[in-house]
Length: 322
Image (cartoon, rainbow, N blue to C red):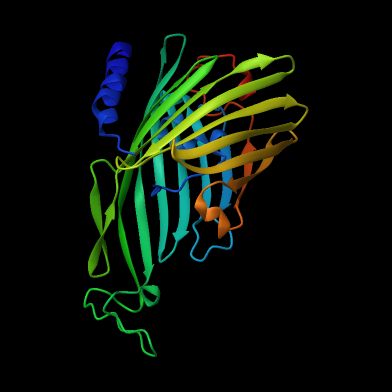
């Protein structure tokens, strides 16, 4: 069974990596390191306890029609069912579009190479709305009464609903962890008013290594995102061990010729169960001249107690999860 799962993971890489090209369609979070469940359904329950996450991201502040994202989710181990599960809701607005997603997940976990290997899936619905009165077409008339001169485009708000899905794999050991997630593959469409909205397929990959230096725990990490047309990566390092404080710094870019932002993260634990963190993205691209950075805040609750025990979970002593 273990060999079959490992073979599947390797074949997934072999098949999909050659499809890489080199923008952002799926909402991203600067503080991805503290909410790995969002980027991979196979991470469900890896915290060995019930965890809730609430996050809000205001991207490209002061820029008209800038993206904003609200996230609410939870995940927990399901030892009785040899895995984990969870739920998340994401509200994303950008320009004329408003997307709301709600999805449940389940992941199967097994031991592999002195660590844990997980395969998981997430499925739900997406409700998309378009502000028709803000659409501008080449042949349209916008003095006084709005007329797009296009029978498919309404001047009112119009909506559509469709199915979304994700498949992921995740490996966790004492020193390092890595994950790979594919979403909306194969590419598909959903109805939107009198037309259709195309759901672009994509992939997210993550990797983290942990090393202790005196009282501190340093965690260099890498994230890549691609829609198989463009490629984006985050390289950063997070640190904990200074009383209740934690934080990090990361650099995000598209390729060696195009950079996006330098991000600074700072947070604090509040008692045994709560934590709060804030990040600021300092723009490095040409857009920095027309917007005032990106702000993101995240609140977390962790029960810090094993729940749903049906069988005794395999323990991996990892200071990152204490």
